[in-house]
Length: 275
Length: 82
Ligand SMILES: Nc1ncnc2c1ncn2[C@@H]1O[C@H](COP(=O)(O)OP(=O)(O)OP(=O)(O)O)[C@@H](O)[C@H]1O
Ligand SMILES: [Mg+2]
Image (cartoon, rainbow over all chains, first blue to last red; front, side, top):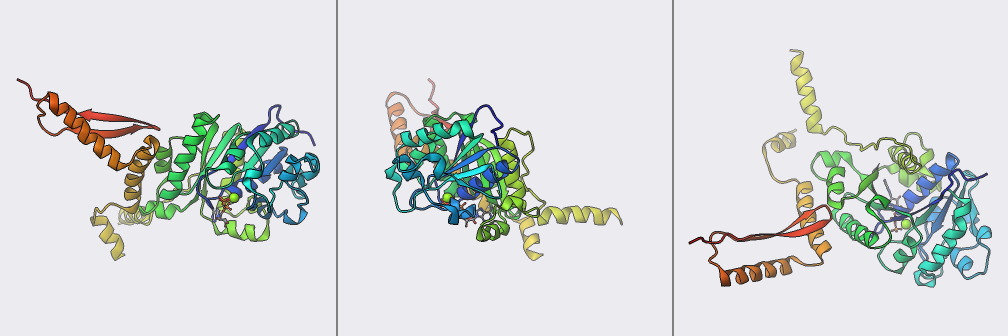
């Protein structure tokens, strides 16, 4: 199958704080794009702590890894793991028994240059932190997705990361914010930062909002991308992000539902208007 | 239900408001790479310098204000006229 776009895009998914949903985002957005026929490569740069193979359900198909490619032990094409469910999706696994310092930003750039002619999108799963692993992950990217949770510690780290991206090769327009694990009912009760709060603090454009959803855990258990689950709110959100990345002008669902108080007021109004 | 009625009448800051307030301060300081301590020190020093040359009249203000990702020092020091 041929690639669709004349220019390929390299997109790094990063966050600063660990565990906010980077790998979940990479696995599902890349699957969603591959499902509609884009050629997508995913690179796991979380060397030493790899998880992307598990989230994609490809852990049993991994033979070679990115460090072996970089050290010239194996050809890049041979190391790419193919996904049977999505023929357009290929993954370059991380090495589990090596360190982030075993590769350099230049070497990652070189791998991406080799992949560009064959893929529409190249996603890079960045490790947590701001050290070498982060520098390796951002070096080759044209655009960055910053994932955060509506929680002060994650927002502070996201802000640090955005500062570092802006001092590297990225402009404001190259950075998109994804808010993961939003709980709309907590926002309405005044107990969680809202989407507007986050956008105001971080001053970058919003790319997507993913609600807290137990289906994420269930899909991860099974090694299935969640985007195939028609009933999941997180799936709808991740599909929406993929569409926006592919250039479709769809609105971002922000899952801001009515609060109990609001509902009560509406109820009161309806109730009294019938009297 | 009681909780709700109580909430309707009390105007305590929500934890969301507190988070926003704390984030505003901490992000501004993180971006400038200074602590609240340093800002307070700076405030004292600026006021001391001005006071060497003028009679300060009223309450001097030295605040960090931020506009998007940029920050500025907002200095307002009323001076006594003749
Ligand atoms: N929207 C969500 N709803 C519920 N659980 C979620 C959601 N997003 C992520 N999780 C859970 O949070 C955990 C961390 O997610 P993930 O591995 O994607 O984060 P990460 O940022 O890649 O972490 P690390 O920094 O360790 O690489 C996982 O167990 C995942 O199932
Ligand atoms: Mg991860």
